[in-house]
Length: 223
Image (cartoon, rainbow, N blue to C red; front, side, top):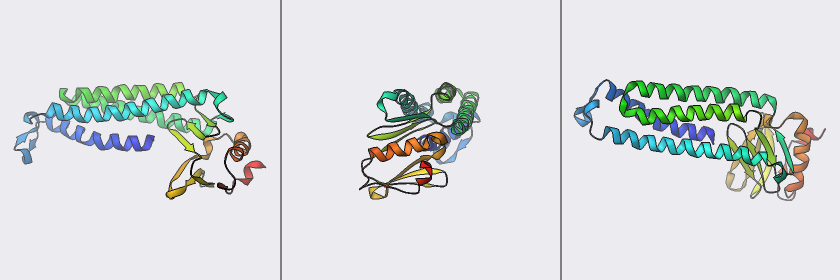
């Protein structure tokens, strides 16, 4: 989720930054026969892109906070465990870096032109929100396994439902879940603490149908 959202935000950010530069330096826009500072509806165009970026940020933020609240309700799961210390360090590093980048983008847009002020505020706000989420959630990131799904809540929220699931396997430090119609979901193995992997596997086997779901090459977790 986080990678996809960041990709869409990046795609929307490029025209915002480009237009802000054209407006700030009053560069010529030959195709429109005008310059950046004279472009009609420039503020409205920037506001439109800003609204789309804000929706993406808000959607991601709501899902991440809801994920934390969900995994905190341990009574809902047959298995629950905090993510491993190794994974927590990785999430913390990437979360702080991501927040810093968004904050710098916000400052850059604010410096360029007053027309990009709304976009700057969005990047600054969600840059700070991301930092708060990462620091606050560092000790709350967890994984839960219920009778219906697996949920991993850390930097991004991963939900693995059992409906249509056909295979569970490990490859290159990633746990893969293969479904009908060639759908594949995954999350890093280090989300599960090493000492909890045996319990995770036993509980997973207890909630999936063994006649429909193949659990492949995870036997070492039971040793």
